[in-house]
Each structure stands twice: as C-alpha cells, then as structure tokens.
Amino acid sequence: MTGARLQAVIPSAAFAVLAAALAVIGALPAVEAWWASAAVMCAFVPSGLIGPGGWRRRGAEALLLPAALAMTMLADPTMRRMALPALLLLASWGAAAAACTRSSVAWRPGLAAALAL
Image (tube, rainbow, N blue to C red; front, top):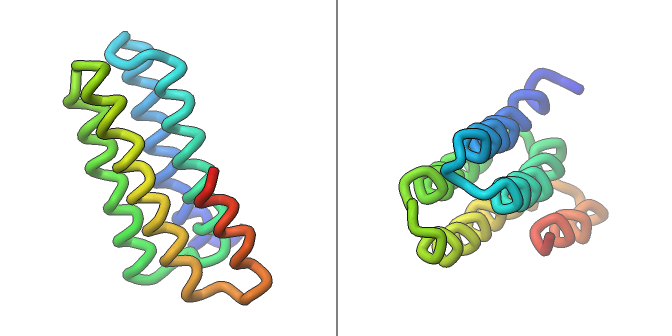
C-alpha cells in the first residue's frame, strides 16, 4: 500500500475511532456507532484505494465532518437517526464520485456496490 492510499484510509479510520469513543462514553449506542463506522468504511476504503488523491477526494473527506458533527452534537436519538443516514449518504456519494473520475470502467460497478452498502 502506498503512502497516498494509506493517507486516504485515515479519515474513515478516524471516523470509526470517534464513533467508538462516543460509544464507550455512552453518548451513542454501540450498534449505531458500529453501523455508522461500517458505512463509512464500505464507502471510503474502496474509493480511497482506487482514487487516493486530488481535490475531489479531499472534498469527499470534508463531507464526513457534518456527519461527525451530527453524531457528536445531536443527543436526541430520533433526530440523530434522521440526520446521520442522509449525511453519511452524502459523504459516500462524494467518495464514489471522486473515485469514479480516476477509475477504469472495470472498477465502476464495484464503486457503485460500495456506495449501495
């Protein structure tokens, strides 16, 4: 794994660490933290391995910030469960779009599958 690809995986790992920390302190149910982390990993790891750099990739990584803010700041479970999936979908869509411009045609169905997960 090259340094650029490793650097592309770091934001999804940081999101998982944030979700785990929130689950440990009791601010977030463990199941919800696990699913949010899994959704981010499924979208950002394959797209990071295919298209690890560029301003589109950094923009997609920046789209994780509203999801992290919603996960951290929304204490009401109902509001968090309404906001978090839409924000995670937006971030996943950004990651797939960033990798789609750099990938070959053969990799695009895999990116679509990662976005669907």
